[in-house]
Image (cartoon, rainbow, N blue to C red):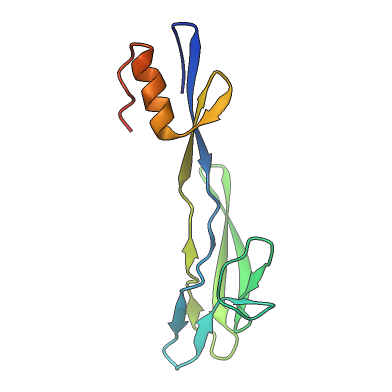
Amino acid sequence: MYLHHGGHTFEIRFEPIEPRPDETWSYVDPLGHRHQWEWSDGPRVYQPDQPASLPTCGVTQHTTIIDGEEVRQLRYECLRCRAPVEPGFAGGTLRRSYVVDGTLVTEAKFRQLMTAAGLPPPNL
């Protein structure tokens, strides 16, 4: 959203946050096999520069055409018993950032500057 008023430009940007492996997720399938994300260094703390894996699962990609659009879906299953597994992910939301005259500011500063310019603060 852009708004030009009183010689200033106010902007709210929305950026997607990609889903990531949820380090707190674990699952025990109907035959008692435990599944959880693992990292190469062992700790169960998410680190963006280290890829996670599900060594107890196999994954296949299924492609379907729906209304002319190609839809891809990953399906996970236990390597021992082939039970379906739905891995846990975190994120997948939107992050807001606030910019005034091309400068990134906090939400509080954004509201303050809008009020000083005679504008009502945004309804966020």
